[in-house]
Amino acid sequence: MATIETVTPESGSAPSGPHGYSKDKDAHLKRLRRIEGQVRGLQRMVEEDTYCIDILTQVSASTKALQSFALQLLEEHLRHCVAHAAEEGGPEIDAKVEEATAAIARLLRT
Image 1 (cartoon, rainbow, N blue to C red):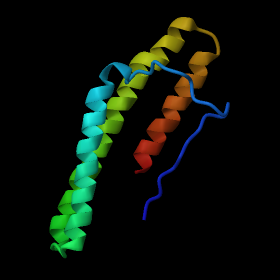
Image 2 (image 1 turned 90 degrees about the horizontal axis):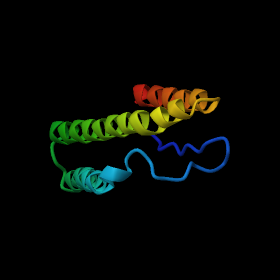
Image 3 (image 1 turned 180 degrees about the vertical axis):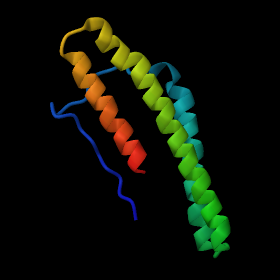
Image 4 (image 1 turned 120 degrees about the vertical axis):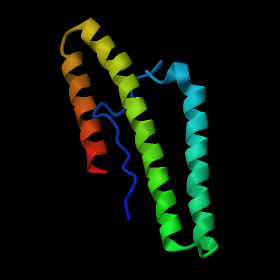
């Protein structure tokens, strides 16, 4: 079973907003609630002894929905946070690129 990994920056606190996703926050929350509904549906399917393949189909759909959400969030991070660091210059850009690279590596492991 996969575990949810909590990642915190080495500094001990995340940068304060606004973040790249802030302008679309309501849409993101709506999307996450839909994904949450899919996962609750999986629980219900198991409780109701639904056929294995039907459950696996729903697992795949839920996984794809989360992956799609993650890619959207990553794109917004690159367009907002990394681009802002590039405009500012200095060592911050290297830190943001490393941070984004690590996030991509985590997404590829899933």
